[in-house]
Image (tube, rainbow, N blue to C red; front, side):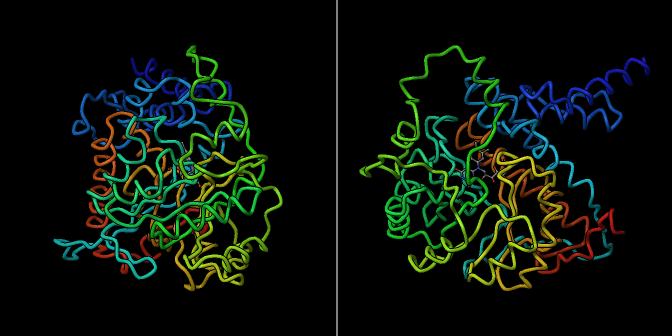
Length: 411
Ligand code: FNR
């Protein structure tokens, strides 16, 4: 019996790490391997019929998989190449352990954080996720309503299927706007102007996708999809952008979202163009963080696009400290990619992040149950974070310093 369990554990771990199974479902498969690591044969991923049955955010992923057409689930799940960065994001958290303090009055914990003069009651942010109507008919409106109901900041993607005006109304307050630079300045300018007019206080420029990517997991899922997709998906960038509401009324001839010629000059030009605060999303290194400070950038999101851009080898939690140190408190540093547990969030906040963004977890919640699914995902993560703060004796984010984590590589 024990031998059979051990064999099963070895097999699951092999499957979870095998590039041959790039078409599998990385997170839940990895989850089973985690279960194997925990030396337990108990089921770790429940099958849930309502959001309230979920014990943790992973419980939403199998439901999303069952609910979505394969190609759409593949788009949500995919990493790039062998999905190594995707796994590195999760594995990175095990490099850090938590140091807890005892006999602290933790009857109240304060999770609020301040970003550009606005205080948010929680540091958990909804990351920009494109094309949300591919996951649920209500798309970005459902996510925005959930963010509004629970008091979370939301960053809206350039490739949103709902306009910034509608999303702002659904959120019940301003959202941050994420910008793909595009290769055409007149289009970029129009997007920036529209976001500014809609009341977005912050522009988030994504810089980690300059020239395409190799999403093999997505391609494998697409092959499983037997539906006729041409009514929604027309060829080329023009076909793609025509379904994205922020491009309505714009002449899209020759336009691409990728911008291989992007340099720091563009950052300067953007700063000169808008009154919005400018945050760069997708930096990972000390050198770039220092340059960001020199170029007057207002904030950084340490991100590798959830392992969807390139196989960089490092998880973002491993990149965070060098970026935080490089900016020396001159600007807020946020982080995303692979955050699934309150303990993950706790570690990032202790390492100096002001907030943590999540992508796929709320995509799973949205696909599975719409707005209530997103709300439950946010609630679970918040509850886990608060619990961890209580365990550790960290009663507020201000008090949550590096002394609460041990970096196993440096002791
Ligand atoms: C994204 N992400 C993303 N980022 C961005 O700057 N603009 C975008 O339009 C999108 N679109 C998008 C679609 C989907 C389906 C996913 C899953 C992700 C990346 C996103 O903002 C964030 O960096 C990651 O999702 C964070 O990693 P996790 O939480 O998904 O592991």
